[in-house]
Amino acid sequence: MPKRSYPFDGVSPLQLKTHVGDKELCQGVAGDTLMRDIFEKTKMLLFKGAKAVLGNKEHQSENGQEISLPELPSGQTVIGQDGKLCRNTQSHTSTPTGVSKACSSCVRSVADQETCSQCERYVCNECCKECGCCSAIICSFCIEVLSICEPCTPKNREPLEQ
Image 1 (cartoon, rainbow, N blue to C red):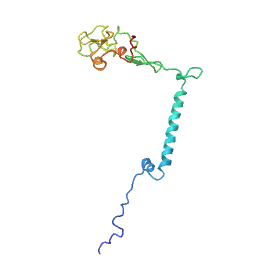
Image 2: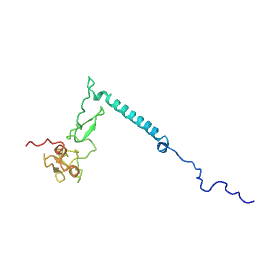
Image 3: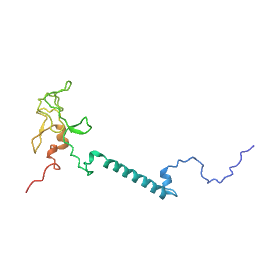
Image 4: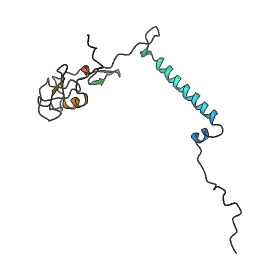
């Protein structure tokens, strides 16, 4: 017995499963209303987040006025017990056990006072550079990135009086 012929037109589309997501819905007939709903939801979430931040008590004084946050300290900082950034207060005179006092570039031994003013790595006399402005000791890693020390950068310097 011969096969039956295909009864439908040859140009009809194949019936395949197609994933329709939010993007396809927004490009469809009701796209304007869907986009408006998405916009309103996003705006509501943004304002809700802003109110949560402004309602945070550590950013406000007693009378409810917002206070300015202190500027972050430059150089190496650590996270303190209260969760805030603070200056590394460890003195360089005592080295913790297991930490060598070797130059970070050439592994020569160094004295206590020879540390980079920016990253606090140990630096030997041959590998250290001096800042052109304030003569602070800078290691070869920081000099490649900064070329001068952090306090001497133009954004931190006061304008010259003329």
